[in-house]
Length: 211
Image (cartoon, rainbow, N blue to C red; front, side, top):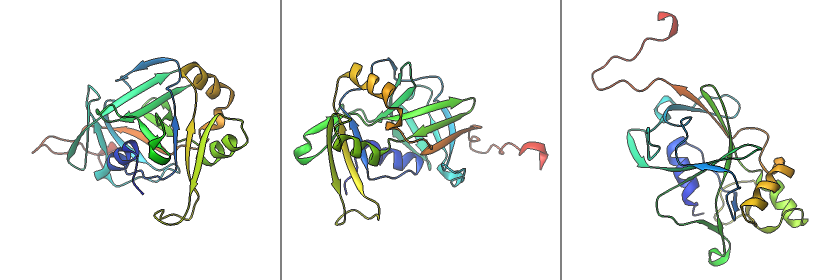
């Protein structure tokens, strides 16, 4: 299955893969920035249950948030960070300006969002609960469109949902206020800030306690 640009980039940079997708027609109304001071630096991804990923998969986000380096490769990066009264949200995309789309002939386009929480040097990233959103679109609790893809190209034993949540920015902000369960309760990814990688020829910093 072809990935949306966001998911392909996230998989490349952070080792996260996924097939289900939810696209929001609009970003939630709030204060938007393309480089919050919380994000630049070097991050070690961990699984939602605290399983550390290989050290080589640490990702370095540039000070201007315009590039990220992982596995020795530097890739262009574009963040949109939105703060609302109910939470903070992240859109990760490239510089093409093209929206993410689902459906036949890419009829339903918008933005793929994550919710995030920052606590000190830890950022928790939450994905949409795609199955719940699909069910609530089906029951008319959420206005939008949903399709399900199973078998064939999909190499997973779980249902794959492609969702579109309709509405302008004010509507999306109200929806997230009324239905916080749109996002999963457990983080998809935990990012832990770590020291910058040593320069060429420089010895790495000793571990805590001099061990």
